Amino acid sequence: MIKRRSLDAVVSDTTVQPKAIAQPTDSRLLNRAREQLVDAAQDAGIALRQSYARVGKAAEHQAGRYAHSKQYRRMQREIRKLRTWLGRVIRDVQRKCSEITGALKHKIEIAQRLYAQKCDSKNKLYALHAPEVECIAKGKARTPYEFGAKVSVAVTANEGLVVGMRSTPGNPYDGHAADSQLEQVSILTGHTPKIALVDRGHRGVEPPAGIRLLISHTRRLPKVLKRLLRRRQVVEPMIGHMKADALLSKNWLKGADGDALHAILCGAGHNLRMILRYLRVLCLAGFAWIALVIGAVLVPIRSTPSPAAC
Image 1 (cartoon, rainbow, N blue to C red):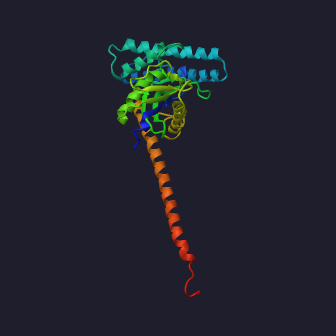
Image 2 (tube, one colour):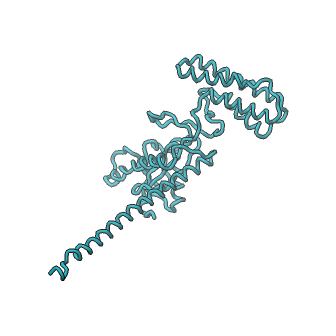
């Protein structure tokens, strides 16, 4: 059980839940979209003028070689070829099919979206089987960009137990996810926190009614609040443990609903591991106390001389 006093102060932060997709490249996406559209057309009984199977695969491999050797103009030439072939297949299917329905319609919509997108386009497509994947930059040197969904995490300031965890589709500003996160905390715990410790990504955000936002590096605070604000960093190792132990580093569930379910399951698994670790420590302490009691009882008995020895 979490004490009600512990729920008065929670720590909120955001992280990225990467999706289980391959590294998105233009050449790979264009060629895969053409292959899937050709397969869907053949299943529907449409005889295409040309499928570009042999030259498409060769162009994809050649674009990867040019990118590896930093010959970017030649790489762009191969990508233009792949885009042109994808457009030809799309128009060929549309001409030969009067009414497009079912799986073929879905494949054409995905192919058209990929065919039309540019470098500066918004809502870009990064995975054919997961259109909800977004490109998120968190400012990390080792991983400048991650592909998945942003997740908002709320933990107690004292124990570090997860009291709220939800996915936020659309890659919103960190401060804009605070209201929904604190609302989830109130629903799950039945208690509205009084103070939320957040980072500087929440600047300029109006807090919900009855909740005070304490932003890190805030000056001119009382000593009690300064001491409490130092607990904001407790969420960082919790996120690290969930990514290392709770499979938060890669989401295999499908769709936006899969993102939400995976986030909740990771938070529940983290709490269960903390509870089991606490019980393990209690058991070890109990065994140690029993060993001390038994030792204290046996030592006087062994030290007492027997009558035969006297």
